[in-house]
Length: 263
Image 1 (cartoon, rainbow, N blue to C red):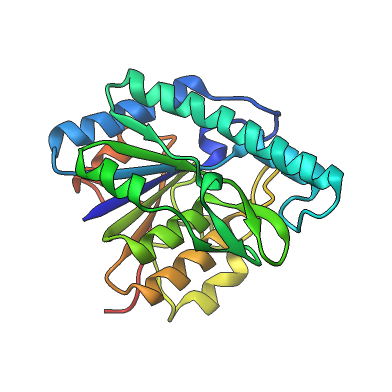
Image 2 (cartoon, one colour):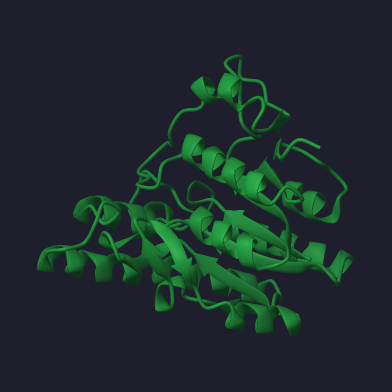
């Protein structure tokens, strides 16, 4: 079974400052991933990351999320792809330096979408890499779209597709918050389709530039996924706190907010 780990763009970049990579933070996260693998050698990890202050600034400039039709917009489409890949290189290098056998996979090379929803994506490179004990690395990217011409596919969108087509057991979403907060600033321990209506008004957007939505969109996407895959569990945790990721992956701790379907 596979564990998907998403590194939030706000965690590994400063979303207020264009193209600002948090190298020290990423180095620590990579060390925690490596430590979890040493503790549990059979742990099958597939890692993805957001674009943060790299792709989002560029995507906002050209309106790439809404559609790509004019020559200027197609120029922007290519520019977003390039800068998103630049951040991916930084992340891959940090993982490699931590001793992880990272294998970069560019979503836009094979992804096709219809009105923002991925309809196809090459799975063979990912499954073959996992079979050989490698750690595939994907990221928020662009994609050709039958309705919009081109669009942005967030890491959550990529993960949703992967969870529907691969034996994914859990998803860990790493951000800079301890979980999903209620109106008193307390972490909501669990969100299900049954209690979401009461929680929804408490969820806001995202600090900094984020063309893909923010916390509300992420929770909605993940709820739809657990409804489609009831055996799947999703946990939102604070990746800025040292050792939380390692402890979560090894089962030593169960912090943050759990998103799941009713038992």
